[in-house]
Amino acid sequence: MQPEILTPLATETIAEIEARYPPRALPEGACVTRFGPSPTGSLHIGGLYTSMISRQLAHQSGGLFMLRIEDTDKKREVEGAIDLIVDSLRHFGLSPDEGELTVGHEVGSYGPYRQSARTPIYQAFVRNLLERGLAYPCFASPEELAAVRDQQQAAKIPPGYYGKWALWRDRPEAEVEQAMAEGRPFAIRLKAPADRPAQVTLPDVIRGDLNFPSNEQDVVLLKADGTPTYHLAHVVDDRLMGTTHVIRGHEWLSSYPLHAQLFGLFGWEPPLFAHISPIEKMEGSSRRKLSKRKDPEASVSFYVEQGYPQEAVLEYLLTLADGRFEDWRAEHPEGREGFAIDLARMSRSGALFDSVKLDSISRERIAAMTAAEVYAAILAWAEIHAPDFCARIAADPAYATAIFNIERGNERARKDLAHWSTVPGDVSFFFDDLYAADEANVREALAAVTPAPSAELLRAIADEVDPNVERDTWLEALRAIGGRFGYAPSMKVFKQDPQAYIGHFGNLTEAVRVVLTGRRQSPDLHEIMQVMGRNRVKARLDAAAGWIA
RNA sequence: GGCCCGUUCGUCCAGUGGUUAGGACGCGGCCCUUUCACGGCUGAAACACGGGUUCGAAUCCCGUACGGGUCACCA
Image (cartoon, rainbow, N blue to C red; front, side, top):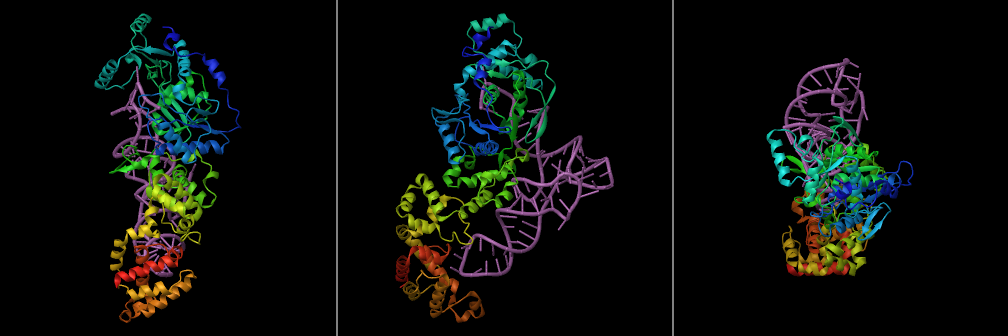
């Protein structure tokens, strides 16, 4: 059968194609990496993980990072998935240097960067294999293939399309011609070399040398619709695009011998491979890969919706990628960028996703931000995920920033914020309308305070305490009033003679806290009062006094 | 099932023949304290198992167990 008829879309010879993809002019040691997502849904956290590693590796070596859309299976493609993936990468500051960064607009001269646009290229390489007797058409139907598999299973021998089980591997030319004439659908399969070695030793940057039986399967290279399988597309693309490091999930390990074989058949030096371990999750007593179907935290969109600072997510992933990062980071307050990833140091076993640790890192990052940075980040998050709250803080940036500045910028910032989604609820009491809407709960909380404060006490505080003074002065004023109403100045004094007092200073501040915030716990009361302003504080205390009387 | 990979505190990592097996997160205690956080001090907590090699093994070798991956005209 004429190779031209089997690969009708090929328009160039492989020599012509290779001439269009010259070696890249990059400094010695520069790494060219790529992320090759299949557009079947939103970005998986594992995709973000490999992208971060790939991009970092490229940039730290003076190389570049590509995005290649692996959309060779149109059946599985999901509308809008490409945009989702590109947006997610951009959101985390991981935009590629080359690829289709916006629809219809490519950056880089090693494209097209969408595999569905490269069919003629793949067909040209398959034609070359056909010409050299290294590939052949296969007309086997799904039913025939299933029958073979059943026989193999019954005979307990390795399943697959290989050797004598390869129905069309050595068919007489006449039968091929006839099948062709009948218009039967066909795939083009690799003719796994008979003279292959039994074993191959393949290098992996993370895992060292690995031994495998060499590939014996006559795998499909070109599907019946003329599009390539992953195996062929990967090998051709990474060769043409000049990829130096293939960083991919460890689920590809078992097809590595096939890929190495393909590189060899074309006479190409293969790139370096790094198979990274998956991010897992505990299910019952066993671990499994994080799954987008089952686990919300498997989707990158989860972190976006929750409002985790991008750097926090990236730094968490970096701690999984390279154990030295945490220590390094402690000594480099300027951030993650200068850290050089070392693939050889990456863990060979899969890491369990630890949201508690992520939160801890995120708290750390948020605590290090200024109020203005927090305000900007929350505004950006709220614009999409909490429009009402966004309008609220946009209406009074000074008030909002003052709120976010509470216990921040001092020696030690609070670390109670892990992500933005809790913020609207956390600070609701600062806004009079929300506070008023919650009045029933405030009254209930106040009624539960023991010993119950008197209306006179609350009025005295409203009238006499000015929050806009030094903390010590403010405390002194509160203590003095407390003293007049029978509160001990401290827990220590109270414990010495409980009978002599109606309560201790903590009981008094609790009452004030509950009145102002509706909560028993809050950030520093003094700062809250300063931010609220004396008038608002007085109004709330007076109103509460009214409830008691 | 075949093939491949993996296994150090609950979790993530250090550790590459001689360490009281280290750090971080989490957990407990104490201190600080106007609550909650923060911070300081402190505690509990691990080399999967069995054989070798060696003066000496978490480290090297071989088995076993357990976990994971893969065996598509999906990627």
